[in-house]
Structure formats: structure tokens, C-alpha cells
Length: 239
Image 1: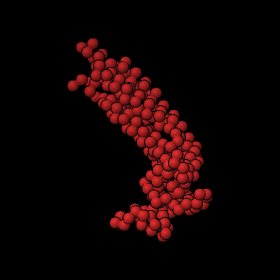
Image 2: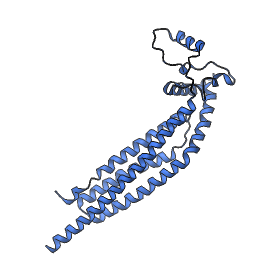
Image 3: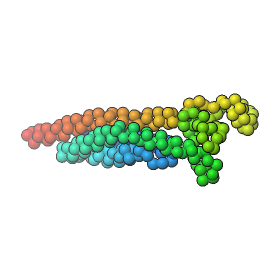
Image 4: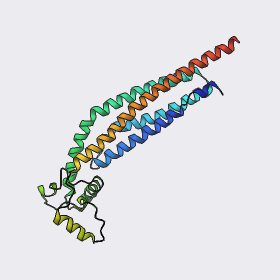
């Protein structure tokens, strides 16, 4: 067993993959909830780039450990320090921009809801979007089912505002029953969307902090390994 076996850069590979996955999930959630508009993807895009960089740097560190080269391990440490600084910068930016992103999402959600009430064929994508949101999050309208009748055109809430009905009755009967008895979800979708997006963003920030800690551990192990290799080399020279 060589001294280079004392470090496991493959852990960084796993961290890189997790960062990419979390950032992609957050990006997909922002895109899905922003009314089909691109909002707040910049920090997630940087995190994806950081995840790819971590995988590349981890491979470099693995090569340095395999070659038992202190110089390569020191370069690996330098790259890890740069990655930590980048992650901290992205985390601070994400935390600072989140209120602005959520404010923009509110505006986009309300604009898309107006188009959801349109009967024009070109606005059908917004009706599909709101049906999906109302079904998945069990909510209705922006702030509640009254949004459907509060402005022109005045409509009954969408059938997607109705709780699931597992009975064998025809869909038309279920829809009529829901409308006549006002069995709609009473909670608006805006708060639920923002809460879901906020939770996803918080997960990204928490993961970033955890990965910074693990990368610091990687730096300590790499420095210890480099120091051990140098001492081992000196012992062999004096032997």
C-alpha cells in the first residue's frame, strides 16, 4: 500500500455531482414556477460550473496522490481554495438576490394568471401551466379561488382547483359538483410557489456550506499527505 492511498479525492467527485444535481433541480424549479420565464438561473449556472470544476480538480488530486507528488497536491489544494472562495461568493450572491428573484416571480405569476384566464389559443400554454401548478400544489388562483371572478373575464375557478374525486362519476358531473358547492382549494398558489422555491434555494445554500467544510477537510488531508510524502522521500535519501 503506497502513501498515496491515504487520500480519497473521489469524495470530491461525489460532491461535484451532488452540487450539479442540486443546482439543476433548483434551476428546473425556478423555470417551472416562473411562468415559463428565465429568472434567477445565474447562481445555479455558476454552481453547475463549480460542480464540473470540482470533478476535474478531484481527478487532478487523484492523479497527484497516485504519483505521490507533493507539487501536484499543493496545486490541488490551491484549486480547492479557489473553489471554496467561489462557492462562498455564489452563496452570498444567491442569498442577496433571492428576495429580488422572488419579487420578480410574483410579478410573473400574476401576469401568467391573467393569460391563464384568456380564451385565446396562443395562451393555452398558460392554462396548462396553472392547471399543473394548482394540481401539484393543491392551491387555487394567485391568492385564492376568488381571483377567477375578481376581474374580467369573470370565470369559475379551473377544475384543477378541485380536490381529487376518486368516485366513478363522469368528469362533467364531478366538475359541476365542485363548482356548485365551491369545493375549491382555498389557499392561493403564490405563497406555496414561493415557499417551495425558497426551500429549494435554502437547500442549495446549506449544501454549499456543507461542501465548503468537506473541502476544507480535503485541503487538510492533501497537505498532510504532501508533507508525509516529502518526509518519506527524505527518509529514503538518508537511509
